Image 1 (spheres, helix red, strand yellow):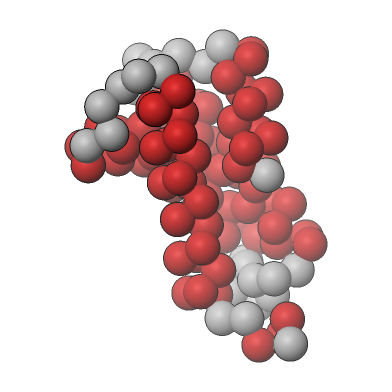
Image 2 (cartoon, helix red, strand yellow):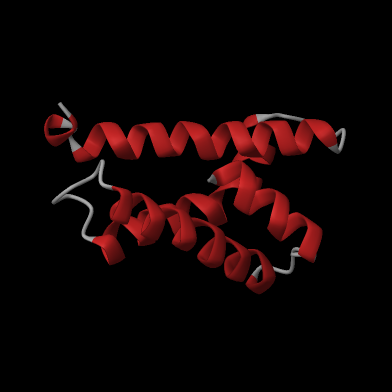
Length: 103
């Protein structure tokens, strides 16, 4: 069954999960959850996730544990680097929460 998972389905699920992470995070900080706000929070992690798909070459085995681990690590690492590069914070507690939530 897992061998039939299509990469586009896996990407769609990851996008939804990152958007939920952004919505919940913004809500917990009492920030407005409008489209622009959610996308401004989510874009670094979405870019990180897509980077992970390329690094892992996940189109070969999108449901494998290896692909998932690489995508997860890239989502967090690249997402944090992009947040820092764009002038947003990446405090250690946030990194930990993001790593757990995005995992």
